[in-house]
Every structure is written in C-alpha cells, then in structure tokens.
Image (cartoon, rainbow, N blue to C red; front, side):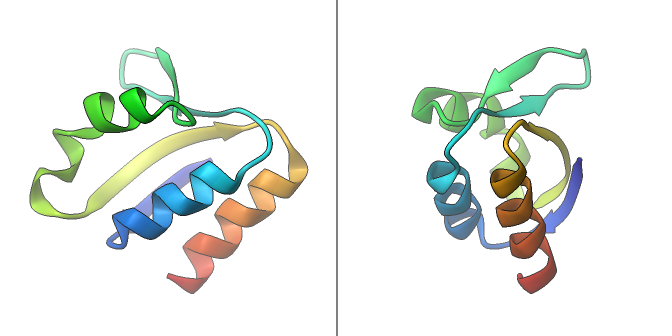
Length: 77
C-alpha cells in the first residue's frame, strides 16, 4: 500500500509499533526494511523526514488488522 502526506511522524510510528505483524518499507530499489525495528525507523527514514513530513512511502503489512490500522491512520490524519 502507498501512504502519502504523513505530517504526524510520531503518531505514524505509534501506529507501526502497535501492529501485531511485520510492516515493511519498500525502497525505490525494491529492498524491504522492517519498520518494527527502531534502528530501521531512524536510519532508513532519516532523509525522508528531513523536512518534517513524508511525501509518499510504499508499505507492506501482512496482517489484516494491521492494514486496517494503517488505513485508519491515513484517513484520520
């Protein structure tokens, strides 16, 4: 799923952390990074957050309830 225009980065990571299954960021090169890892959150996304918001990301979530959490976040934030 593609997510766009994330301005509340702290809330975004709270939603990621609350997911029960794996949530991965797909890079432009096709690599998959585990966003449940704090190290991956900080290192892999540091350049994206340089202006305080996220333009667009491609995420993979494997559990239906996690997908629902992410969709609800995108619709309400």
